[in-house]
Length: 187
Ligand code: AMP
Image 1: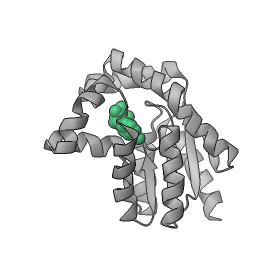
Image 2: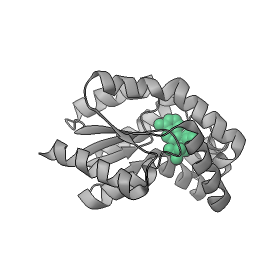
Image 3: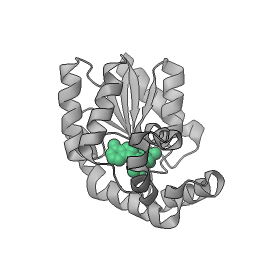
């Protein structure tokens, strides 16, 4: 099973991706988590990306593409979460998956209105104290999503792999819609 999950920050995609990974026994490849653990470990990569993450800006495409290639080469199935976020990233992913002969089975889009996404992120910021869940960084991340990542959504909408799921429901309701979509893919 090779799944890509898209959606704005606060759409609940991290939670749902983790559940897909657990249910279908595939690794959850979450670029945000990989970068945050590099920051926590104080690696060279972590030191380089820390200020970018704190501002809610995007890490340069070439660095992200290299990072994701290393991850995907090592696994067969996966749930990819947080990548691609830009047109150069989606183009690189297409070429890469073609080269390693691991095409995506499905692309899920979790849709939520901005006001709900902001509300959820502010709540998470209060609990987890993530620097990028401060109001200024939240606004920046959602702005970048609309400005850059919506083109990624359109790329998959036009090639027919996109399945849209309403993300402004309870975690269980969203999960039921996702399971339904994944069952159809496997059928
Ligand atoms: P996330 O947890 O997916 O919201 O990612 C947290 C942060 O990591 C983002 O705000 C970006 O700074 C960085 N990041 C994660 N994935 C990417 C990506 N594909 N391209 C650029 N930056 C990324």
